[in-house]
Amino acid sequence: MSCDWREKLDRYVDSELSGGELTEMEAHLRTCPACAADALTRLQLKRMTQAVGRRFSPRPEFRLKVEQSVGASQRPWWTMRWVPALAAAAALVLLLIPAAIWLQRAHGEQTLGELADLHVAALASANPVDVVSTDRHTVKPWFQGKLPFSFNLPEMQNSPFQLMGGRLAYFQQSPGAQLLFEIRKHRISVFIFQNRAELSRLNSESSLRRKLAFSSETWTEGGLRYFVVGDASPGDIHELSELLQSAARS
Amino acid sequence: MFASLYNFAHWLTQNREEAEDLVQETYLKAFKGFASFQQGTNLRAWMYRILRNTFLTSRTGLSAKMTDPLDLDEGPAAMPVTSDTPESMLLARADQQAVLSALELLPVPFREVILLCDMEEMSYQEIAETLGIPIGTVMSRLSRARKSMRDLLAAKMHGASK
Image (cartoon, rainbow over all chains, first blue to last red; front, side, top):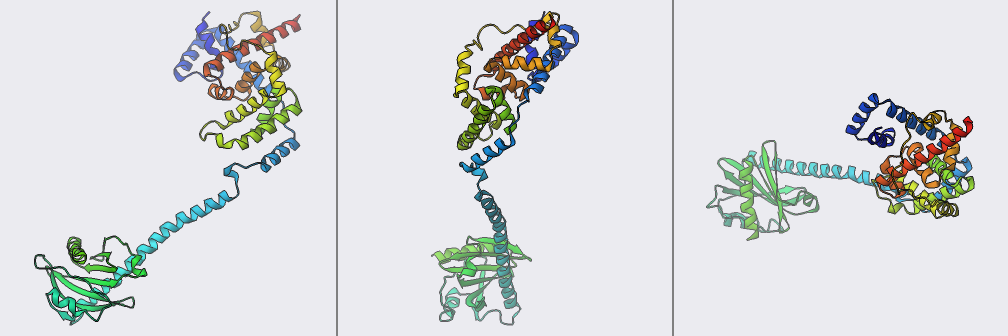
């Protein structure tokens, strides 16, 4: 008599033996008629108990009564009526956020596209600038009385950039300054406008974009919105932007 | 789960009215205490545990405990019967009526562990959660419960064969 195996027969018929134990047990049952017969008896008894056990069923009216009494008591949070509404609202917000981001991005693209047009139009003009000077102390005062704001320009002597001059620009019904710089024959326009709601929707951080071979960078400083647009490399655009930012802060 | 819970309640109480009271109270307790239910744990075991604890504090449950002063989980493991004994041969002839009578005669702690395992097909782990006892205790109690049931059946079949 192999007690070790017999002790495991309950776990065998209850499917509670682990993989290794199960393999061993099945191998043993093939060679031990006594254990095999015992296992069969236990399995039959288990099946009969299962069949006999399921003999009481609730009355339909009792089921209804419990459903009503439970419904009248406090519902768990996941059955409350506002939960689906909240879920729908959350789903809507999740849909709206990407849409808002996309709209903001499209708005930004459009703004930069229009400024690139202004830049190209100025270059195509016979007189790209109205004040022709490489001297910032000449260019800046020229805007006095023409613009409702003032701005600082950086010293260009120790930089690869050269100031070519400036002109008035109109963008979205507002006047601003357009300054033209040159670096290795590439021309770059710097636009300065008073920051407004439409413009402030653009990325407030200094951001660099590249589209249709034009690079651009924009930021806000001291209530003014700066745009740097040109066909120079993004590195040059960024370098000029940093010069302007440090001048504005000085 | 409602029908299964009711069936189990009826087996515990052996009475329709008490079973209905037990199930209704279980559902009310479960919904009121749903906050205490840990997400990810076994909902079925949790419900059966509430039902069983409610039963144990009921009049019938208390009297069942009083009349069953068994050393449930003490003593040596039940020795299983061997296939060549008369008992085993008698068991092979047991019919559903005999099994039903034996189940009804079993003390509640034995009856419930057999029903949870064989009828509800709960794993040992689920039974342990339902009864609030370690798995090792589940195994030893189940072994004794089945031994007790086999003894009852064998006695019944032996009497019938006379």
